[in-house]
Image (cartoon, rainbow, N blue to C red; front, side, top):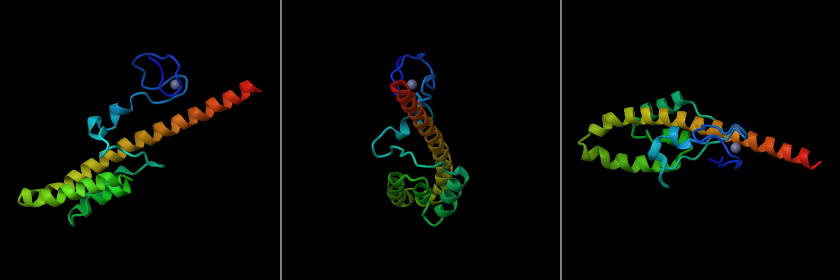
Length: 143
Ligand SMILES: [Zn+2]
């Protein structure tokens, strides 16, 4: 196959391109199909996030129905609105059971999402470094 970052030929099952360092199997560790939809797509933040902080926000704020605030910390406003709306319906529909479950679910999901995002942040950085290396190489070749 060919690297989708630099276009050079590489091994079929490579996780990273040996030429530019670009990540090739982003989908494998970014929550599988869960983030494959336009509405739930992850936005790569500028810096890494602390999974512990994300989980703590989800858990403690979850008891005052503000568990989705953890997604704001992670920079995922789409997930904030989505879960905020779902929560409003879930609590009466489950006769309150969701009230007990949601803080735990938010904590687990936001912890995992922070880890997924950090993988994407690192991949983005290594790709940017690869781009920088290539442009340097391009410049020196032109000289
Ligand atoms: Zn490449």
